[in-house]
Image (tube, rainbow, N blue to C red; front, side):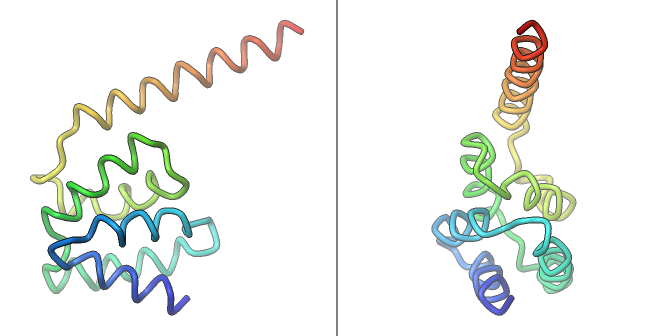
Length: 108
């Protein structure tokens, strides 16, 4: 729990890329409520910044565990800094692979 808080605080620093990758690798359903609280506090202090958005997009595109959850929590606060094109492309790619996977497993 404290680990997530320390990493989340690092997200507001200029070089937040490493922190984002550490955080999204550690996020699971149990940590979601702590992540929500951290994001609310950081947003209130205006510490969710453009470097966070720039570091988060590659994590989402790589479909790193927790990256979509982190995106959902911070996107409201860093919306002007997020390029939606790679995120939408990743979303559609995941949707297509999911549909294809369901089709292949049901035809066996």
